Amino acid sequence: MMGMPITIEGVDNNACFSDIDQAFAYFDYVDHTFSTYKPQSEISCINRGELKLEDAGDDMQTIFRLAEQTKQATHGFFDIHHGDSVDPSGIVKGWAIEQVSQLLQRLEWKNFTVEAGGDIAVVGHFSGTTPWKVGVRHPFEIEKIVKVLSISNLGVATSGTYLRGHHIYNPRNGDVVVADIASLTVIGPNIYEADRFATAAFAMGSQGIQFIENLAGFEGYMIDSHGTATLTTGFDHYCLPS
Image (cartoon, rainbow, N blue to C red):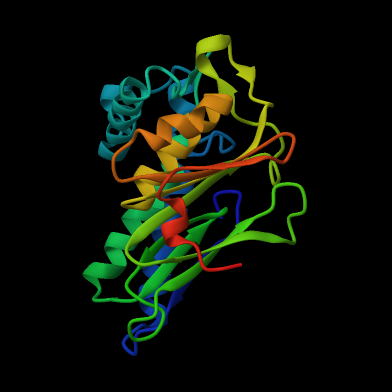
């Protein structure tokens, strides 16, 4: 769904499949609204000039507003406009995961994860007071895990080339593909925040990890194209011993 695998894992006794059905129905709605690959999606209609933004649904207008806020917060390194078209996928995925996380919490889920394409929302604990464990993939050997995080009530997002190849561009440099780093993982207060800043920081290239370092409430782990790792000062706080 949404062109990626999506997993929901809950460990509460009251978790039920009807709740999961609601969650996946929401992801399906997001896919049919924001996918640039579906001819009849709202975003495709906007790109063809058949639908004005002001006539689109509330969620579309929300995404455009959030994208503009992110563009301003990242000094232009995040931009959903590419030439004459708009592709909001860089912000929609994290936003959609966060919306589903909030939906499950309204359904009284206390301990669960929602993961889509490598980005994950983590709520509560895996067992008792034991936090969830989240692995960070090696960008050159994707079957390997380079870091294991122990986290609760946070979001973890990774931008990288190991699954989709070079697909993130620097909007401040003529949309030139970013090739000097291989992956950048960001831990944030929720998955929406982690995802949008991971995408922007990756677009900054090797300077992106410093952007995360200076961002209050966030930590990051970057591996460059040569395999050298750089992490923010507080990232190790979340890492289990190797």
